[in-house]
Amino acid sequence: MAQVCWQCGASSEPAIASESPPLRDFHRLLTSNDIPLDSEIPFIRDIASDEQKQVDTLEAAIVQLTRKRDEMVENIRQHCAILSPIRRVPPELVCEILALSLSSEDDGDMANEPPWHLGHICRFWRHCVLAYPALWSSITIPSSSSDPRPFLSMLEIQLVRCADAPLRVCWSPYDDRNIADPGSVNLVLAHSSRWRILVLDIRCKFYVPVSLDWLRPANGRLLALETFKVTGTRSRVEIPDIFSTIPSLRNVFLSNWTFKVRTSVPAIPWAQITRYSGIFDPDKQIEILEAAANLVSCALGFPNWNDVVRGIPIVLPRLRRLHLETPEFIHRLNTPLLEELIIHYWGGPTYGVPEILPFIQRSSCMLKTLVLRRCNVDFNLITVLQGLPSLTHLVIENDSLHSTPTHIAFFDALENDLCPNLTSMAFRVGSSDIDTRRLFAMARSRFQLEPPSARLAQLRLFGSWVSMVEPCPPHIAVEIQIMCDEGFDVSFVDSHEEETLKGKATFP
Image (cartoon, rainbow, N blue to C red; front, top):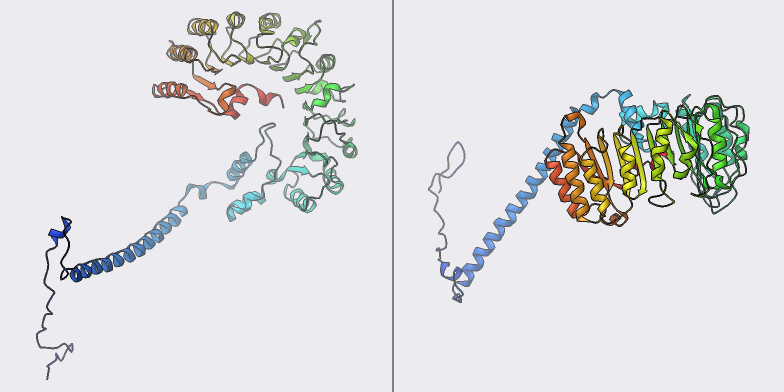
């Protein structure tokens, strides 16, 4: 009878070790192509089976450890989130950040869409969104259509949440949806005394008539309106006479292409307008400018580039920013305080360049920014820049894709005494290696000028018409990287920054 321990119950007899199968040496088979003996095959299979069991055990352990690791990483993330600085950001700063995320590029105000999605991020942000009326102050009036969305109830919620904040009202008819929804119009018109910005983005079919009679009930109630904008295609649109007696109106943008064939200018209190852009024939533009002596910023478009008649210049004593779609119209202007000039050469790449200098001399202004769109680099341009020593910012949308002797002369002049106060420059590069090499040599010399106050601070490059497929050609990318490694501020800009550099944002 076997004896057992009275404390643990274990047998007191010594255990008999089981015999292990004899170890076999398969090194010979592992290092050769010899055929195994029939007696060796079972042992080989046992070894493989045992090893496979251990592999399965290890894989299960790996899965378990991986799951445990992921749980610990998530636990660490959650606890670190408790210490995140965003939790200490004051609600009013969160609201300002959210407002910037919704800002519009055109007018600096809220975008069209209300921030419904921002309330889905977290409970704290939802409280911030609901408590900040300005986030809900951008109202879009829908057009009559079969759209199933409950616009009316959404507008009612917006108007409650925006409280007494000034409103940005937008209507964007498309194609056959060119009639504003009556229920929404009545709801928004009830708050017309709070309208600060009115945007009509009309994109209907070619010459489709668009009625704005729904605006007439707002006559005499738009006391807070500061900005009125009409943009779009060639739809026929007639603006009712409700803007002529608005005391706060300062910004007017009439860039719908149908305005160029209108017989009369919309009734606007031009004497109080400070920012204006519009597309009209020259006579109507002159009529507007003669009545708008307080303009600070102005963008002028014309139906035809060659129908401007010379005459006595109109004095705009406060104008600081001018954007012209027709260079010839520069003869009709006198701007003693002008600091920024943007010219688009629709009539030809060299047309009108020589006229810049006489205009500057006649106006006796100190021009700081010059933007020339679709302008060839020629000797006329060099002559003009020689007469503009006050320039600090120069943008040239070089219209030539190939290097010319004038390009070399232009870069040589910039490397010497041309535009001595230039601190930033943007240039449209072509496809020529000679052109770009000379450009970078010029830029490097100006980046290293002495004293430091005379140095070029930044260089921005944008591509040719064929560069939309390849945003930055490889040979240019290499040169940019070399200059960046040397500590210079050089970059190839994307399409959005390119249009901003060239002044497109000035002319809606």
